[in-house]
View 1 (tube, helix red, strand yellow):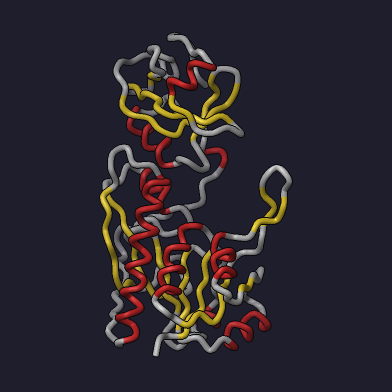
View 2 (tube, rainbow, N blue to C red):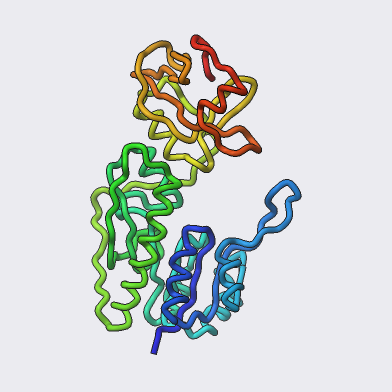
Amino acid sequence: MPLRLVFMGTPEFAAPTFLELVGRGYEIAAVYTRAPKPAGRGLALQETPIAREARRSGLLVLTPTTLRSEDALAAFRAHQADAAIVVAYGLILPKAVLEAAPLGCLNLHASLLPRWRGAAPINRSIMAGDAETGVMVMKMDEGLDTGPIAMAERVAIGPDMTAGELHDVLSRLGADLMARALGALERGALLFTPQPEFGATYAPKIGKAETRIDWSRSWKAVHDHCRGLSPVPGAWCEIGDGRAKVLRTTRGEGSGRPGTVLDAELTIACGDGAVRILELQRAGRSPMKTEEFLRGTPVPAGTTLS
């Protein structure tokens, strides 16, 4: 008989795993996700991607603001789930909840732990220039992504790969990995290994202050910064008559004072070397290739970007 599960997740990253488990016939007693938030120009409340998928499947959707209350714990226990599956949920699970399911709470994390524990592992891995990353299934404990690891898959990070592209690869790979982990759990064959103490790094949420491009850095650091924040929240600079997100770059030719436009292809001098901007996005507009952008906003060589 399939395991009885509680699924806990919020963003698009969690959707492939949720749909994989539904498709495999697991009994999902309840779906926990974050509460709707105002979004868009009209600030209408919008459900999370997981809430929308769960309602399409006719499942119970719960949006508690905390799991620390006695009522929240009692509600969780009432589901009588064998295990909880957690994918980018966004709320802290207290010890009592972690221990409520007999087989524990399994988390899908988008890094090769212990590297990049925390909220933004995909962005941080690219921003740091990592050559590879992956997804891991671990059993949650009270620490921040410190629980023992069961299974992992590695992924090479291409030199021009963006955070959005890596997100999509890892979300699909993670869905298959979690399904295989649950299969092993059903057979009593899922083994856990403690994380090594050496090599732990942390991936805090991206702050607004760090999204602005610093042209004084090396071309590689600027390139990794831009692709690591693409498409959201987006690395940005002031260009032409306003602000634009820089979504894609590549290594450029030439050198000069940092921030200086070097040619008609929008190559920008950095502290060491240069980057060529390939794709940008104005606020409220669709992304556009550099050629299209320059037709509407000429940026002559010698201009300094800030």
